[in-house]
Amino acid sequence: MKSTPTTINTTSTLSKRPYDYIKRGIDILLSSLAILLLSPIYIIVAIWIVMDDGLPILFRQKRAGYLNKPFSIYKFRTMKIQQSNPATYYWEGGVPDDFVFKQATDNSHQANFTGIGAFLRKWSLDELPQFFNVLLGNMSLVGPRPELTEIANCYNQEQFKRLRVKPGVTGWAQVNGRSNINHGEKIKLDLDYVEHYGLWMDIKILFLTVLKVLFKQGAV
Image (cartoon, rainbow, N blue to C red; front, side, top):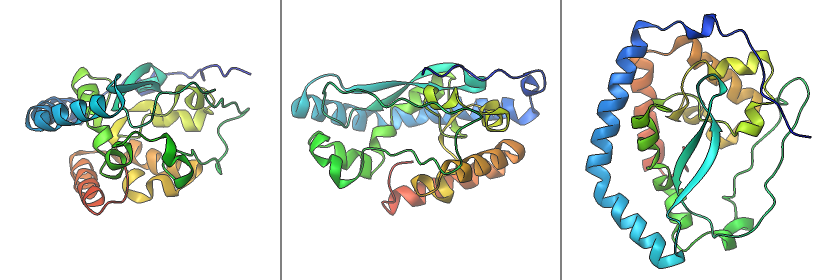
C-alpha cells in the first residue's frame, strides 16, 4: 500500500526565529567555503568512481525536506548499479518506535559496494555533495537527517514536528547514537533539537560530528 503524506496545520510552523536568518547566512557561507576548499577531493573522488565503476558519479534519492516538501539529496555513489526492488514502508498511526532503518553498510552487503564505496562510507566522504544541497537551500548544515519520503509520509502528528526545520547534513541524533538508535529515540533527539536549536547548539553538533568522523564512527 502506498503511503500518503501526513497533513498538519502549519500555521505555527511557519513562524521564523531570529536565529533562522543567521543560520541561513552561516549555511551559505560555510557550504560555499567547504565546496571551494574540498573541490580537489570532489574531483579526485569523481574520477575514482568513474574509473572504478563508470557513471553515474552521484547517487540521488528523494527525501523529505522542510514541512515534508520532497527534494533530491546528493551523495557520491558507493554501491554498484543493479536492478533491485526498493523497500516499501507503510504504517498506520506513525512509524513504530522500534523501527531501525538498515543501511547497506554491513558485511552482507560488501559485494555490492564499488571499489571505493566502503572507503567513502567509512570516512563519510559520500556525504560531501550535500554541501550543494545546503547551498541550494533545501538542507542546512545542522538539523534532523532527511528522512526517506516513504517513511516521512507515515509520520503521525508528533513525528511530523521534526520536519519543522530544514534537514541537516548532521544532527543532534547523529552525534548521540546515529545508526545505533531506533526510530523512537531518533525522533526524541530530533524534537529536542527542533525545540532548542540555536547557534551554540549548532556549533556543538558540528564539533562533535568532526570528532566522530575522525574517529571512524561511520557516516553521519
